[in-house]
Image 1: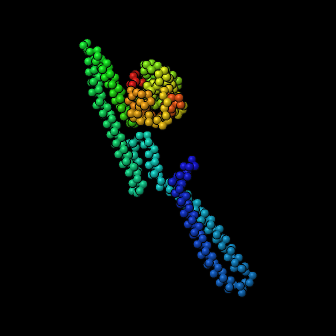
Image 2: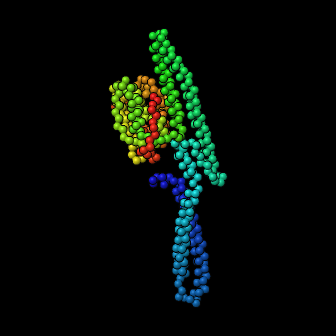
Image 3: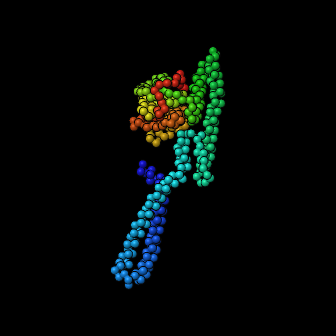
Amino acid sequence: MIGSWRGSLRVRLTLVISAVLLLGGSTVLGGTLIVVNNGMEYSLAVAYGKWRVYRPDDPTPQVILDTMQSNLLLKCGLTVVVVWLVGTAVGWFVSGQLLRPLNMITATAHRIAGRTLHQRIALNSAPGEVKSLADSFDSMLDRLDEAFAGQDRFIANAAHELKTPIAVNRVLVEVAMGRPDYPVELRQLGENLLAVNHRHERLIESLLTLARAEHTITNTGHLDLAELATRAAQAVEPRAAEKQVRIATRLGSATVLGDPLLLQQLIYNLVDNAVRYNQLGGTVWVSTSADAERAEVMVSNTGPVILSHEVPTLFEPFRRLTDRVGTAEGSGLGLSIVRAVVRAHGGDADAAPHPGGGLSVRVTLPRKRAATDGQVRLPQAIKG
């Protein structure tokens, strides 16, 4: 708190104004005392020279001069102090008024940090440097908003365009494999093609989810993260059984307000990644909890050792754990989708490696608008 006051531009401007007032008042006071002192010495010398014949018992000129100087110094000094204090208060008020547009720009920048690029400063003031700065900032936001919107539209349109030929390929392969005269030696090739086709479908669905998560959430409802975690654990149970991975859950009620589809995909990606990038016979721990302000989802797993400097890259798009587990079966968008969905809901996601191998991913979401009842009906299926 002290550091923020010391670094406040308003405080520094007020101190500068105060110092200028004090220095100016002291200079004026000193100059006034010098001028008045010289004038009084001359006047007293003339007056005493005329009066001493008739008034020999009068005080000496020096005593009179000292008394007048002390009185003048006291009154002028008090005047300077009063003017300095009043000027400092006025400087504090004026600096606050002058810096109000900058505070508006700062507040808007903080709100935009949550990807709310549609907000603008729209400063209504007389033309000047601050008005020019605010207008330039709004113009920059216009360009950024257009660029991000264009990027999201491109991803969504490209993904939709790719879904049709991939779906056609899958149908053609399935029809060909269903023919009675289908050669046995080509069945393995058909299964491999279907596996590749399925991976491409997952990639496209992930891209669509990522593009949707980058936009402002509009479809919201109250839902319990514990129920989402239960569904996610059930959905990945077949894959976990193949790898002999045990899923342990400790699910406490954690009601939040958010997009059901996105939050469902978020938790599924966490649990699916924990199973996918695990060791044979490993374990996955899934827990949900909440307090008055925030809800939390924690997913941890066993697995290969992960270095600390590698953790931030896991949230980047198309970054897989290939180098650690020797497989590239994932699309590399799992944790990217997680972070995008969390940020769209005003939360945060972080990860920490285990010393003996494996990773813990923690997701926190705000609960300030959540309720404990009136939950929405969740979708019946989770897309893997």
